[in-house]
Image 1 (cartoon, one colour):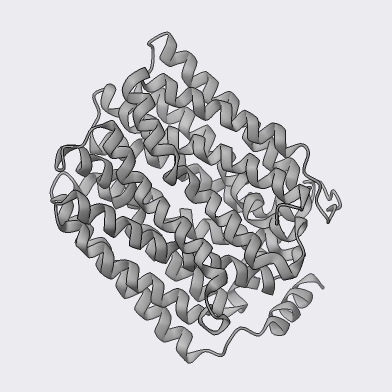
Image 2 (cartoon, helix red, strand yellow; image 1 turned 90 degrees about the vertical axis):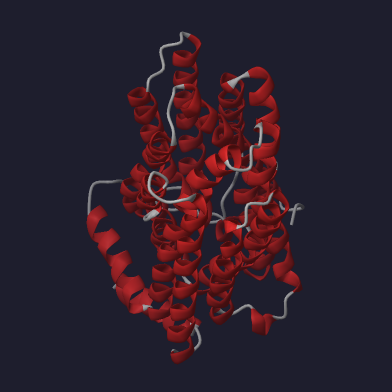
Length: 410
């Protein structure tokens, strides 16, 4: 894969950037606590970062289908670099407040909503079709690099040098990714249609396309519910659970947060070794249900158990993600891929703010263990229902999918 210069530049640039995301993840937790906040404030901070993605994701997919995808990548990275610099300035002058933090995270989230459809759509533009699965295994591992490498290093850095050091590293990684993105060349130079006509109509057409491709619509609905179940508990409950119940320090907290990423990377690189018949949508739904069953064990207040559970949940998640993205990349034409991937991202992020706010609020009335139990039940039920519906449907017919694409283009 790395003999492909464009893929190499993209992969290493975004890998460095996601390591920075891991630093921000830990730095944000400590900043909220440093400002005197708790579960609710952390949930609001996480939601301020994720909620605007939902709005900008609506337009992000249309822009990817209209403009050069690499321009969206490097432009959003540079924008987030400047936002992080502003955050660092207010930390430096010791004038940070929760409302200002929420505003800066909101702006960063808007840029992320444009970034993710481009990130998830670029692979077919820079690699050959027969290498899509292998390329997607590498690319999807990028999203877990932040959890695998970032948190342990961030825990040590923030613990020794303070919160500002964590955000400073994040800013540098955004800058590196943005500059490297300038050197990527895509196979398909999209004609610049501009923004003057039919942007909303193209988004609606994208939704109609997904609605008509039933396997894709059902898959995204299940993904929406699974995201709702798992994101809040892992991003809001788990850090506070680790610190307050398991009595972990910064370095150990980083270890806990990296366990999920470690499992995800293992899972992603396991996919090429799995027999083709098992890389189906049926398997995707089974893996969602298995994540729910394993997540149930987080209710056991033991560090070794927590680390093991997070690793296995990550493995199942990594395998299912590669199956999901590869099926879409091989079934959807490039003309519709941006909008399709914006809906994939919307399914992943759409319920995140509600999940985080619900998790933060539930921490005031329920124990962390009960929250993990409820989350595991939702995941198991969603995966089981998805499998049942998928079992009744025919297998993916790429030809039919492309015929729908051509029909909608008329």
